[in-house]
Figure (spheres, rainbow, N blue to C red):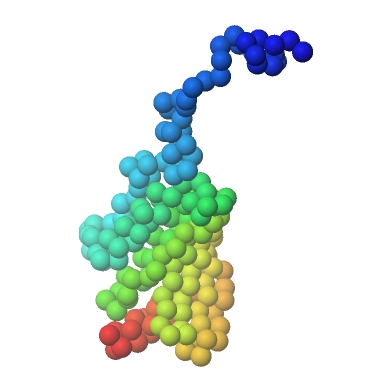
Length: 183
């Protein structure tokens, strides 16, 4: 074995001793790897279209924009394991789904990231719940349980499924009314 300055020789050996610190840009690279793009690089703005075709800003659009933009700050491995960042396909579907629930009675949903890059939105009142899971590709699934905890709806929710959205909207309005009476 040939030694150079007391270091084993190998392909790419140098006469200079080992480095004495980290690259100044290493921390930036690690931050990007841990957190992904900065919030300013990935953000959405949600506007509602009124019945007259005008753009307006309603409370649900404001709330969902805030929740989604918070999720968009999550980078790879946000769960401490191998979770993917939230996809824009999931965001687009969640925004379209939320538009179906913009009523005076609706309470805001809880919004959660999914490890595959999707998003889940939920409404709960006791054992009654409405859960819509949107995967990373933007495909939605609806699960509704009644006040006994029994599953009443468990279906895929394609964008043009009027019956599915009507069932979800009725369940959310029922939950909203129940929560408003309790509050």
